[in-house]
Length: 140
Image (cartoon, rainbow, N blue to C red):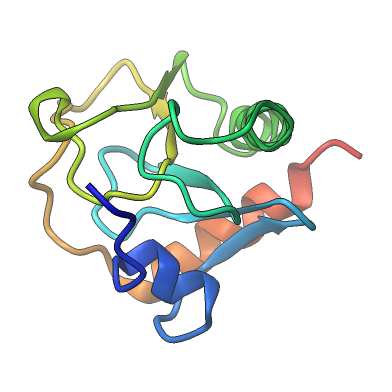
C-alpha cells in the first residue's frame, strides 16, 4: 500500500489541519490526541512519510523514539500519572486507524477507564491547556 499523503497527520504536518503542538523539531512533531484516552494523551510522529515502523529509516526512527521519550517525560512531570503507556500500532489489524507512523504517549491514572480508540472529541481549549502544561515540563 502506498503512503496516503491525504491522511490526517500528513495534513497536520502541512498545516492543513490544526493541532495542539507539544514539541516540534527537524524530524518529529508531537501534538495532543483529539480523542484522548486519558488526560495528557499525546501523539508523536516522524515528519518523514511512513505508514508503519517498518518503512521508516533507522535515523528517523531514532529521532522519533527520542522525541517520544522526551514527550513522555514532559507528560509525566505535567500530569503525575500512576503509570505511562507508550503504544505504537502497525496496520489495520493491529488497530492502526491513521496510516502515518505514530507513537501514543498515554498517562495511566488510578481512576478512570481506558479504551484505545473510540473516545469523543475533546474540548480544544482543554487540549491547548494540556499541551501548554506538557511544553512547560519538557526536559531540554
